[in-house]
Structure formats: C-alpha cells, structure tokens
Length: 197
Image 1: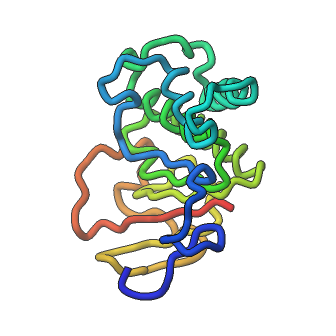
Image 2: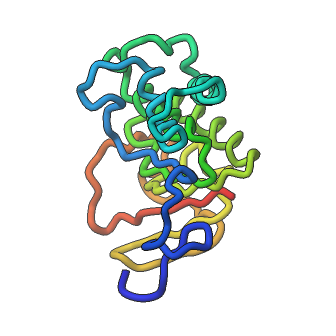
C-alpha cells in the first residue's frame, strides 16, 4: 500500500480483529498439508475462528455438514483427504472457509487446475452464498463458469488497473472452450479480480 487506507467492515485494517467474519481459500494447495485427516476434520477446522477452541456444539456440527454438502462431498465426509483429486481438494478448502459462515469470502484462483464438474459445483455454491448476502472476492485469470455471477471485475496488468466495471470479454486462449488453467503466466497476462455482491 503506497497511499490511501484499507478498511474491513468499516474498521481500519491495523485495528481489525474480527477475522471470523472473513473466509479465505488459498490458491492450489492440498487440503491437509500432509497431515492425515478426513474431509470432515479439515472442514471442521474452519470453525476455529468461531469456536475459539471450545468444544464444537450442535450449531458447529450443522455448519460443517452444510459446508460439506454445499461442495457436493457429503457422501465422502469420512474419507481421507489424501485420496482426493485436485478438484476435490479445492472443494474441501472452500467448504473449510464456508464452515465459519463468513460475511466476506476471499478466494485466490479457486478454478486453477480444477475440472469442469468441480467448477460447476463451485459456481453453484457461490451463487447460493451470494443469495445469503455473502460478499465474494475472487482473484482469477479466466472467469469460466463464474462469469455470469460476477457483477464487477477489476483487471490488473503490470500492477495497474486497466478495467473496472462489468466483466470484459475473454480474449485469446482463455476464451477457448475447455481451457484449463495449468500453465505458468507470462508477465503480460492480465489478472482479473471479480467481486460478487
């Protein structure tokens, strides 16, 4: 930050302490990070901001179940995350963030390396969250199935804003059907930030 201020929910960033109001989905990481755990255990860890290390109650268990259901993994809740595909790992990370029932959901490249079926599940999940008044901030290189959900796009190139408004039309290889985002990025490739409100 070289100028201006950053606020979260009307509070200056350096004074903000209500981190339970924010859910975060990192870019392309495994759901358990090498620790043996089930889907339910990983998703339940998302409630820590709410439970503050107290024993989880009925409402906590219900929030975990709902988050797992939202990402379409209810039938696998007891499975080890080590047995999951990349797209399923991403869905577990999304469920972990949703388990805290955040008011703001920040997602860094949630579609990276994710198959089309998982992309569609993610789009449906986000549609439901937005209907429940959750704001969603996405960092994306291509919009894919999320495009109809995005009402504002900020496009950055070389650290500068080149577009701020409705999502622009995709160009080049990113516009091709079935394009899967697994290649390294060239310095000239724009980064799109989407906001669903």
